[in-house]
Image (cartoon, rainbow, N blue to C red; front, side, top):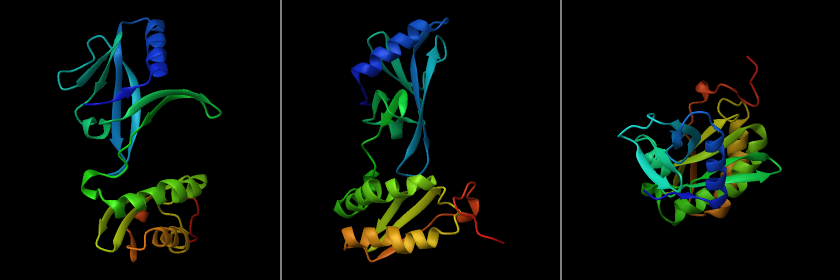
Length: 194
C-alpha cells in the first residue's frame, strides 16, 4: 500500500495529536465510494485501542495512518496534504486514479480529462458532478450526481453541453448514455413542476 503524506500534513497531524487530551496513535483515512471512479474521504483521529487487526497501518514519524479494509481499494497512491488558502484551511486527499483499472486506455482517459477539466467545473456551481462509469465500443456511460441527479434540466445539460464537449474532444465516441437513477435525486438544482 503506497500513500503519500506531505511534510506539511505530517507537521499538522503531529501538532493536532499533541493538543489532544487522550493518547492518539494516528489518523484513519476512510473512503466511501460515490461511484466506481470516485470516493469521499474522511480523516479521523485514532485513539489508543481503536485500531483493529484488519486495518492497514502505515507508520510515519510519531503516528500511523490507518486504512480500514473497505477503503483500501480507494486509497492506493493517494496523497494526504494540508492546504491553507482562499477556501480555508484543512486536510485534502487527492486520488490520482480517476479511471478504474478496467477503463484504462486512451479513450476513457480522454473522456475523463474532459469531465475533469471542462464539464465538472461548469456544473459544480449547481452542486452537480458527472462520473464516467464505463466505455463500450463507441458509447460512454455517464452518471450524474449532486444537483444534477433528478434535475429537470439534465436532458438539456446532457444533449447541449456534456455530449457536445465529449464528442468534440473524443471523436471515437458516437453515443452518450445517462445511466443515472434520477428518481433517487435528493437535492436537484432545478425541479420540474408537477
